[in-house]
Each structure stands twice: as C-alpha cells, then as structure tokens.
Image (cartoon, rainbow, N blue to C red):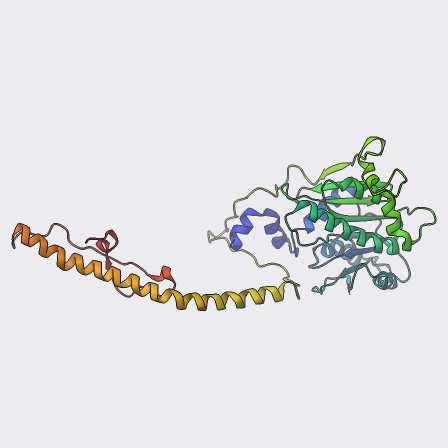
Length: 383
C-alpha cells in the first residue's frame, strides 16, 4: 500500500502526521480524556509501553506544555511525566524516559525516584503484543500484559489515582473486569471513535485506586487467582463460576469521542492543494529508533535479493526460448504465408494482411528489455 493510499484509507493516520503525532493512537487517549477527564488534577503521570511515544506526546501537550507556558509556572511545580519501554524512543519535551521492564520492581523504584518519593496520579498503558489473528490467544496474552502493568501500578500509583490500559475483548473479559474491580471501584471499558470497529481492542478506564485492606504487592497474583474461583473452592472446574448465576458480571461499555466525527473504518478523499498541485503524502513524524523488528526486516530483504538472483538465472533460458518462438512465428508470417498465398492466387495477387508493428516488451519475464519490434501476428500465431 502506497503512502497516499494509506492516507486515504486511514483518516486518523493522515491526521496524526498533519498534527505532529507519532502514531494515530494519540487520538484514542484524547477521546478517552474527552469522556472521562482523566487529566484533571494530574501532576505526575507514567506511560507504560510508551514507544514510539504518541501517548507520551499527549501527556506532554496536555500537562507539561500548558504548565510551562504559564507565566506563574516554576520549575519545581511543573508536571512530571515518566515513559517506560524496553525500546528506546526519540526525546519528547518534558518526558523522562526509562528503558526498562514494567514487570521488574526496580523499574517502579526508578519511577518513584524521579517523582522525589511521591507516587503517580495517572498511569496509562497502550502496550499490546503482536497479534496472531487468533482472538482467544491474543486476548489471553494481552490480559497477561495488563496484569504485568497492574503489578507496577500497585507500586507507583497513589490511592485515588487513575489507570488506563488497552484490552482485547473476548470471552474472558468479565474475568479481567472483576480482577480490576478489586483495586478500582470505578471500571469502565471504552471504545474510542478512532479505534476501528473491526478491531477487538478497547480500553479499561479505572478510577479511584483503592487496594484491598492490608494488601501486599507480593500477594497480587494469588489475590487475582481467587477472582477466578468465586465459589471458594480450589477445584479448577469452578474457575468459570463468575460467568453464571449470581456471579455473572455485567460490564459497563462506553463509546467515546465525537460520534459525528471521522469514522476510522471509512476512506476519505485526499485534500487537494490550494495551488492545484497533486497531494503530497507526509512522512511519519518520528520513525522508531531501534525497532525490535529491524533485524527481521534486514534478513527478509537479504533473502529476497538472494531469491531474485536465483530466479533470474532460471528465467533467462525460458525467456530466450520464448523469444525464439516469437521470432519463428514472425518469419512464418513474413515468408511462408505470403509464398503459399502467391502459389494459390498468382504472383500479382496482393497479400491481404500486412504486418503492423507493435512494440512488445519481454520485461515481464524479469530479464529482457524490449530491444526490437514484434508483430501483432506473432501473438495471434500463424502456422
């Protein structure tokens, strides 16, 4: 898919480049904020799985930049934003970058150190694994990532704070909802307008962090496992009891963003230039610095070049044979057929068909460029 074609088919991708966002996902967080006002009163924020940095950009523009431009602002009062990812990313104004693992307790200690011993008001996480297309598998892996994010949330989020995380909707969504409800009284699953309807993604918006009384971070997974066995038994057959009867959970699900706004699944015509020139697609705002798939792409390119070199050596004899066939048919038309015609009709009888030259390229075989004119009759085939 070319750049212009992608701009036409994905309006939010185009708008992201026009407005300086590193990825279209920035609009998802903006639309969540429109509905839930998650940035109100936030002085310290953490972005988990931050690369390439679009959500960190939103945090910077919504929190840091307005405070910095205020005439009453002081350096000590500016909001603090920490972005965490295993991969490095380009700098963002007002964002402290930490390259680390969100499942490691030391990463949480580094975050709190940057906050001068205080805890965060808001934690966001837009991380997701590479999808396989098997929805049950994708949902399971994504839920494990959310629980890993919840691990660091219990270390760095203050009581009363907010947590926003990407989820994949599926048959076990109710279980995830019940697990989040252990720590947040208010949990809503939201679908931003910029998220494609064809995608199973949504976002868990968790408000008013309130861990259970006497909660110890070391007991997190043991506590979460109990949610899967509401009947109070260790029997695995009871692990889905929360799906039925009095244990059944109804999840509040909300569409957010302007419902009359752009449709993420619709194609929009490209804007025409003021001076009448053709549309010029913009480059991405910030390509990844060290993407994890870089090595895979290089290996794929190398193998493709090797394959083409081998394929060329195999196609050349075929192309030469094809050229000889066409040359033979041309000779048949220009020599043999007129001779037969004259033998039948006499020497003075004109041949009814005159060859009309037509340039034919053999370049579709990958190795021969058009060097001579072949005849239309060569393609029809006379014998």
